[in-house]
Amino acid sequence: MKVLILGGTTEASALARAFAERGIPALFSYAGRVAKPRPQPLPTRVGGFGGVEGLAAFLEAERITHLVDATHPFAEQMSRNAVAAAERTGTALIALTRPPWEPQPGDCGQPGDRWQRVADIKTAVAALTGPPQRVLLAIGRMHLAAFATQPQHHYLLRLVDQPDSPPPLPRHTITVDRGPFTLEGDRALLREHGVERLVCKNAGGAGAAAKLTAARHLGLPVVMIDRPALPPRREAHAVDDILAWLG
Ligand code: 3Y8
Ligand code: NAP
Image (cartoon, rainbow, N blue to C red):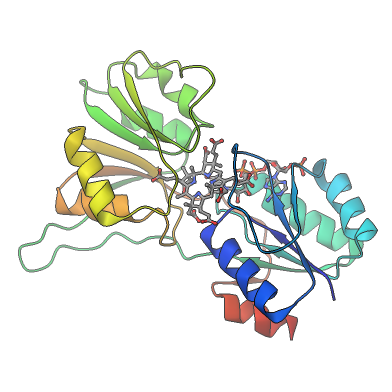
């Protein structure tokens, strides 16, 4: 048995620890998106494979018997390639993913979530039409330019790395931080910057959830971007399910 983990999430790191503790032969893979990805207790490769072809060739060259797609729910291209390459090479495939967040209703005087669900980044941008506000964009670095058509807002940008060139947003503040985030930290962030609205992805999991709890407590509206549709594949939500699947 030799497993390849497509990583980049809290769950992928938990899985890597479980494999290392059990001596399960495995490789860990990052896309190479950020300057210093978290070190893993497994041999790690960084960078794209070169599409489905490249991944299929890698699976065969490394004699991978099991592929675990533990990438982020928004890493749509990687997940599609994993399904195609696993099929082409006859490699067993499972996804380790987390359930989407659900809006919490209010209870005993506490306000509930104020979510406006949108299908994708484009509709999230359209949802920001209106008078200037202070908006937390907690969607990372890759899609910031899309918001240039709503320049009236003051954007608070939370990024993993300091960008090499400023984003095309006339009014913005950058905060460089990597999760997992805490409720105290996110509540302080929203208060310090007078945030009036949040835009985020329905990532699920615990690593990025603190801002939603803080927003609920402060009664702030959230533009919640739904996940992209992924091809059907076997899915699990817990490390133990993956270990059971590996037998
Ligand atoms: C490179 C590798 C771990 C994994 C930690 C999780 C939690 C903290 C919260 C906010 C939301 C966001 C972003 C986020 C979180 C975890 C997880 C998660 C969101 C690292 C990491 C890599 C990335 C890539 C990065 C993206 C960006 C997205 C920032 C490591 C730290 C917004 C997603 O600068 C860039 O290009 C960043 C790109 C893809 C989304 C985007 O579109 O910009 N993640 N994040 C992975 C690789 O190279 O393969 O160093 O750990 C991992 C983590 N980021 O093991 O502890 O599990 O989700 N990551 C989102 O969820 O909306 C931040 O700010 O509130
Ligand atoms: P993506 O758009 O689905 O993937 C684009 C390309 O990046 C893939 O086709 C592949 O290149 C390469 N790639 C992606 N993940 C990889 C991995 N783990 N190992 C090797 N190559 C990988 O992916 P993304 O949204 O840019 O996410 C990139 C990484 O950041 C992933 O590891 C993901 O788990 C992590 N992440 C993403 C988000 C998010 O919001 N998107 C949030 C947290 C963490 P080739 O086609 O050349 O193989």
